[in-house]
Length: 579
Ligand code: F1P
Image (cartoon, rainbow, N blue to C red; front, side):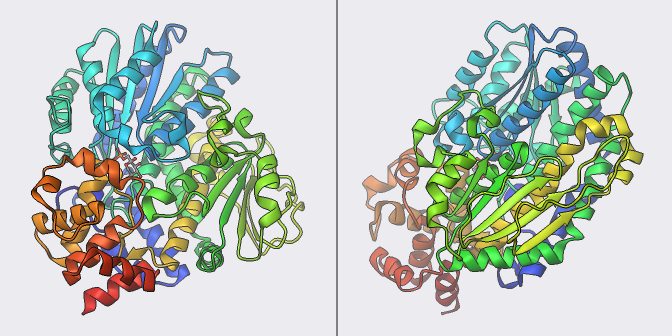
């Protein structure tokens, strides 16, 4: 296998034909690999090297950053989902520091700036110079910077540029690389306008890390349930690792207590088990949401604070992953940008998909809601979503029991949504978590555990619903957008794998689909990958058309007609591959 993060997971080979409950069961089993390991690779719970690296980074942060937060920064940076999770982590960690009267010193960088928090801006991911400029800008005037570059596939040039810049300036920067492939699987393809590959940068950091001047945190958590969908296991692991590193810092700084990373990681595993105990109900939610999408309906997440953000992040990933439209799945948060807390502030002027408040939901969405639409409410008992106008839409309530110290009493169930079609009460095992990390740290961190649980549920809903409408073949996302280098190469691998063609044949079929030609001329074959990506990015059905062309050796027009006649991409592909 070339890259583990792009590989196919054996557990989900037939997820495309599974019923909704089995879909959730398969996702649970894949997520289990995060903790228990995959192949010869130990999971988070038994990988001593990972626990040690977490501790070393936390200690470095305490000594290097928190001794003087005024002049220091922790910068977490990434592309797509990795950048969104960096944003979410910075927002929550700053809140904790402010709560303790410490200057907030966490910042996030996302390739393509704040617009990319909602809609993918993947072209920026391929540019190391963009990365370097963004890092220089955010660190201006700061003396000590702990930089954490997140790229699940160890592939994003944007992050490579930043890591390299950190290593060129060792007096100011401590670089950390976070990702989920072994180092030898870091991308070794040329980067435009640059003289290094990702692998070169990773190797340089590897050498530096031996002297404790940098760190690589790259547990192998196994292939994604949907091949290459790094928003799922890799995204989850990103969130867990960031929170485990800084739980140690907060425990020491604010609570003046030591905390073991192993106990924190065990809390997440406890929450995984408790979440998937509800597989039957989550399966019913998947079925209801998928049924709605099948008939042209939409899925809307409404959440308070960080739970609103979990829903919004989940929604933002559906267009690049499944070829969904920006309207198919959306997320909304109470008080819009005021609660969101991004660097650029209110960016509603960027378009209607940036209207994110509950008020915007009632103005833009409520009047057109029908029984094909599903509204999913994410809330804790203490922080409930007000009853918004949902017309005939199906409503689903996901309620989390708060962790309240010292009297962890049962609060009465939310009552504001009398018409709910499904109510899922998540009674997370706070007592077990309290035993693991103690009441004080849990009081500070319990919302992170609620967020991870709701991430698992939202990922299951959006993935399951798209499986139900035929966007997945076996466990492959066949309608993936071709909008950056990583996705370009993924598209070629998908065609190769499903059609059995050579790499050159597969790439030719892709070029034909992008340029809408039947036989690529020398001129088109001479175009650069960047030029092809720029044209493919706004296009629909690039990969399905290329797949049909390669399999049937037909014209682009015939491939497009086949898809028009059978809009369920999976069925069109299956029919043609069985011929
Ligand atoms: C970054 C990323 C993913 C997104 C898609 C394209 O990947 O934007 O978040 O889902 O796969 O790439 P990475 O750099 O974290 O591997």
